[in-house]
Amino acid sequence: MNTLAEAFRLINNLVRIGTIAEVDHETARARVQAGDNLTGWQKWTTLRAGTTQEWNPPTVGEQVVLISPAGDLAQAVIIVGLFTSNAPSASPDEHKRVYPDGATITYDHVKKELVATLPGKVNVNITGNATVNIGGNATTAVAGICKVNAQKIHHNDGNPVVTTGHVCHFTGQPHGDGSSTVTAGK
Image (cartoon, rainbow, N blue to C red):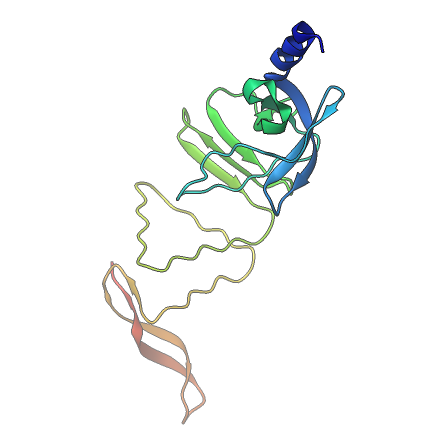
């Protein structure tokens, strides 16, 4: 074998650009088409893979970089995330994530604005206490029914609320009724 040709091949394989051809989500491996070469099942990089972990697998057709120790494509690692013509923003002020279903999360550090557009259901599960502090105004707009389920509701740590939506068992007429679980203050 020509050692010069072999050395050139190994040098050429140190860093290659290709596209994801297949993804195996179970083993967290992918195959890359780089020119005429289709790699074996290689690992891809992620932001964190220790005690803190992030799962964001590459997609078929995504452009990537292969880094191959000693030019051996069998040892290649896939560096994901090269834009082709699909960059989700042209703004230098935004950090933006776009999901396949159209959901987007955008933070503009100049405007100091976070916008999340979510086309489906949202669940926030907190197993401990939670506090939300708002330094300005807050608006809640609900197109359907808004329910609050709690053992007690305290609005400004006030006195028990009197409601008028109760019907007297004796007269059948509406009357006021004090609540022991809902309080309101000024």
